[in-house]
Amino acid sequence: MSLAKPLIWPFSQSDVTCPPAEFSWLRAQQPLVKVSTGTEPPVGLVTRYDDIRAIISDIWFKPRMPVGALDLGAAYDNSLNQDEPGHTRFRRLIAREFTPRRTAYFRPMVRRIVAGFIDIMISGERPADFMQCIGLRVPVEVMCELLAVPSDDRSYLHAATTRLISIDKGDMDGIAEAGLSIYQAVSDLVSDKRREPGTDLLTRLVAICAADPELLSEDELVVMGMTMLVAGYSATANAIGMGTVTLITEGLLPRLQAEPNLIRTAAEEVLRYLPRIPGPVRMAKEDVEVGGAMIRAGETVVTPLTAANRDGDQFDHPETFDITRSDNPHLAFGHGAHYCLGAHLARIEVQEVFSALAARLPGLRLASGVSALSWHTGFLGDDRLTDLMVTW
Image (tube, rainbow, N blue to C red; front, side):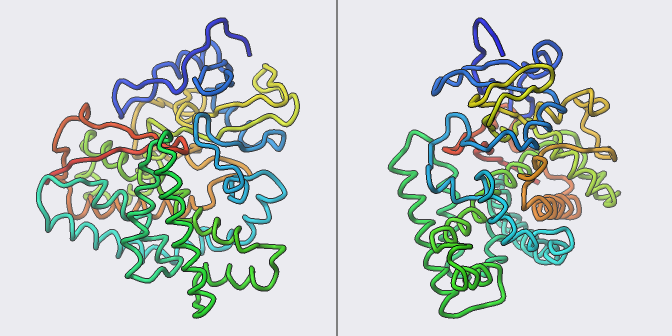
């Protein structure tokens, strides 16, 4: 890991649909390189599929806060992002709720939610902000259903979570205020479940906390509730938003209307093709060799999943968006012990949105050019489209 003049991370993009041009060059010439973040000493950046997959799966690397993100300290340590043994303890508590078989039962509920938000969008004015109408609404509403959040509380939770992921990392007061409001809302919900138990996931976690506080403390319970509401929100919304942009610009919604059997492979290709997935950040626990280079103990490594998913050594014609691609082992949800717990649910959400758009709005189009679209990077280092104006 040596470079006389570090590159500046994160790299810029020509527009929101194109991944950074540096990835292709680095994969071929310097797949492990140091980059400057401006907020801490230079960190390692890997760009090859095999190396990224190895690092995010390796027990000799531990998770750490995203580079340049606000340090959340204990809150981060109490989340599913922590290292062992805490990670496995937390994951086992809710893993069975997110298996492929279990999440398959949620599909009708997701379909109903998507249909309802599309109804609202098409009954309103044109152009409409797709992110505000659908992209940012579906993930939170689905999780509210799983946690059995009362209907009267959902608008508040949606507004609070959207505000949290929309705040710039420099707005310390705003982050603290938004985070506290969600914490309090989840804490109040936990109290409600304790008084009036239901059959939902949060009620089951409340029961575990009451039976064995050593297994799950009260604070951990609330943070876990927050994590489920917020963790996959931005990522799923981004997949829905950017996937819709790609399907529109490639002119593929009419084809999906005619060939609905392609919805699932189209959704997987959207996840692979996403031009901006920051990816996990890891710290080496000891000296580890990756791809022929040494990463020293204590060094931080950035693993942009977009770079892995555009690697020509893993994918044929990686720059081609192919909704018929069947061999698609992308890393959009990570890999290994920290593979995204909500991946199967997120897949269903993405599939149901694309299915509904193809069936009901095959003529959906952007109200302005791609150049008008822009990213927002939140305080946790995650990215999402700021808005997406569409018409039909």
